[in-house]
Length: 532
Image 1 (cartoon, rainbow, N blue to C red):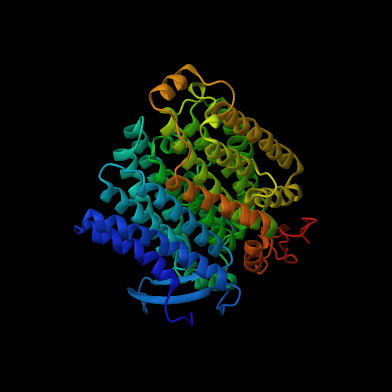
Image 2 (cartoon, helix red, strand yellow):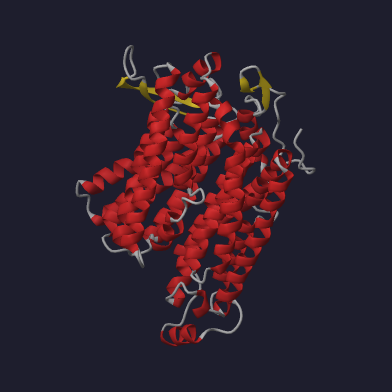
């Protein structure tokens, strides 16, 4: 249990939700805006607090800051549901990332002058509170509940404040994401019922299933439900088409929170629930998942991304493509691969949020997302150009940024899984460089297009204002900090994963079963970048 006089996890969840409730009850706009700065800052501060104190905090069952709140549904002969909050080495980096991205998105929203700003902020605050709850929850029921709480505002914001094709985008997102949520819910209910543990507590489930594992067939079926249900939420190919359309239509702060944070829920669910509780199922589905990811997400979607002429659509498709790397790390099944996925989730969340922010800043100065109608913007907005190029380098995975370590760990782990799939996956780095550098060249360098020359004549573009610089610099600084000091996150991740055996297969009289080989360790910060 936490020995602090306050619960940083509950504060991070409750603060934005409380302000959202006050706004719904009629809080004046002036106070809504002022308090919103505090409500978005508190989760960031709590994230930094938990990261700073993580190593020295007392642990219980691998979790720190562990606190349980009774719900009335967690007693004897009940459903076994309790609000149990805590962080382990996997959830802590994502909890921190959610705080950083949420604060940047909130600052960007507050200076956006959006119509009906009070309602806009209320919905963003609900998203932020739900996102902090996802990564702080130890109870599987509340993990799912907080995801749904954060998901609902997405549909509303795209439909009301979205751009082109917003009605169609909102409807498509609703259909796909509801389908994915329902499939994953069926899988979670099946896990609860078939386990016989009579609890949704993740710690208790792990302990019970370690002593009483499910049959191989049940594991395969339940993991398949979770893989495809969570996979839709993460945009696993070919059920990915909602993502670029939705992000292209979504208002910027919503796209930052959804693509940067909420989209990681499916991967997080597979890492925290699917892999440790259903190892035989994960082994069974590893190869199909790897081929779907490398052929569909990395190669097919990668070439589609190259073909994009709309800046925001290109960023949306690139997000789908990079999720392919994450699925490949899960398929590899080792501590190194899964650790790389967690690092990549953090890095991708920061970098894609930065790119959506900067894309909107470009639009404010060019009045278009069509890259063919831009050009030469670096002459009048050099700071914007520098940040955009830096964000592009981060997305590509250039050394010095956080993305590099995640991709490197995934590729190293994937080589032991399948050299052929690894070679195909590495080709995605070239694809990323092509569309990333070409977009930077078209937007900022070379002669201005006729459209941009006309716009510039009427509305001379200016460089980034401080209201735009601060959230962008915050995201970029986090990418640099992790890139230069990966041990700040890799050590907690390693501590959580080395207690889990790497997934391996042997054949006995009963067919495939999972065995426990020597634990793999995660060494992301060593200069030789080797796992041993």
